[in-house]
Length: 114
Image 1 (cartoon, one colour):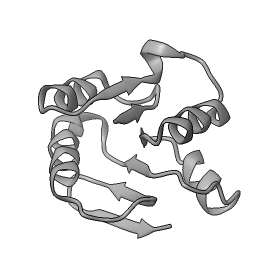
Image 2 (cartoon, one colour):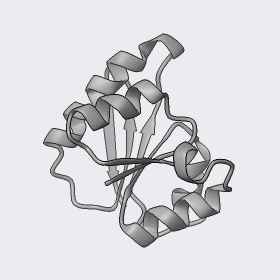
Image 3 (cartoon, one colour):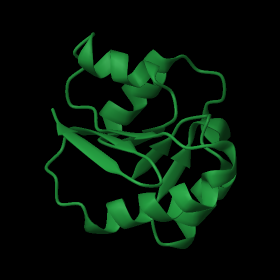
Image 4 (cartoon, one colour):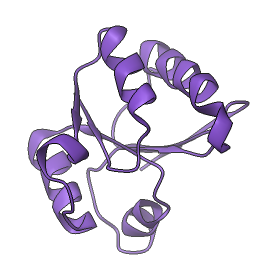
């Protein structure tokens, strides 16, 4: 299961759902909550956190939040179709043990084991 932060483009969420992934969108169920609550929801349910918010990197690496797997998207505004395909490819093929922090661009995927 994937928890999509509020900043995730609806096209990406729809693409994930259309390819068989279960996605809960913060925008749909808890709009406006603080990052701490997003983290709490993801950890409580053992969900992957999909975000474009750099602050979650700070939570993981500087504040040492444990057990959180983050899929951090970095792409230009017009690249939401391309990043969707890269993300689907990662989710279908990745074998990395959780937790990890993945930085995903349209050209590259970097995974850091936590």
